[in-house]
Amino acid sequence: MKPNKRLSIALLTTATALLLSACGGSDNDTPPEKELAKVSFAVSDAPVDSAQQVVIAFDQIELVKHGQENIVLDVTGENGATYRQLDLMQYQGTDSAMLISDQTLPLGTYDNLILHILDESSGSDLSYVVNERGQIPLKQPSQKLQLGSFTVDQNGVQRFTIEFNLRQSLVENRNGNRFNLKPHGVKILRHGNLAALSGKVDINLFSAGQCQADSGNFMYLYSGHDLDSGKLADNYDALVNTATLPEAIIAPYASTDVHWSDGNYGSYSFGYLPEGDYTVAFTCSGENDDPEQYQAFTIPNPAMQLHEISIVADQNVQQDFTDDTAANTP
Image (cartoon, rainbow, N blue to C red; front, side):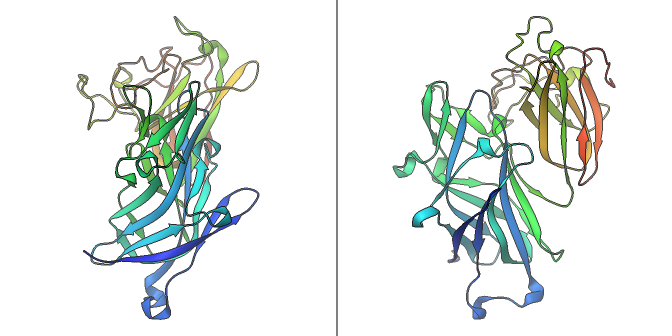
């Protein structure tokens, strides 16, 4: 097994972000400048039902590259702490918290980015969820969240955002006494081809049919156009789902809740979306969507409340939903 190369990280604070600045090893360990690039990593999230806080204590960040030493970044927080706590609920939409700023890394494709997390497995209560039942422990199996590959090239300073879609990645156990954090729904997204989607939703849609106006209002986002609206699925994890899936079911790329923002409209937002074609659909019956199991929620609900959109890099796309406008229906 290859030994690990450790790099220390010091905490810097600004009014808008938490920055972790890193420096490399000795000159003898550093490849030629043409083989290096500066990279920054940030974290953001899409909200989860009924949670007021989702606090994670990041201990280390490990980068795995085939045939080379693993790079382990030892995170230090305020007052010399050997971890950094972040409440992901504070970084929604296009908001993010910078974990690593301008870190010099060798070029090439990395096989894995692993977030090391302090949780109850290590005798720690530093990672937890706060909801209507109080503070509930958050557990990360093996204390490592393995997020897969990413590539560093020569195109200037590169910034990546680790996007936590908590409606997909945060799973409550059967006893309701612990949450587990899973890599499903957590993506490493590279800036430069990213955009955002947001809009208003007429509150008359909130109480359609048997829906209750104060709950269940969510947006679901799917990749592509010309989709069969009868095949749009709620969240599920194909690796653990035990429910019968209809043929040609279409899994969501992401989902988010609709906030009641003023007297006549709610609002929603998706941040850090890769450019491309999408279909966005509203449902007033999306409450308590199990992130692991397909539940056959009605999407869209009311019928016809979906729109086809195209996203171009660096754009903020606005798509509103009203009760008297029929969307583009496949």
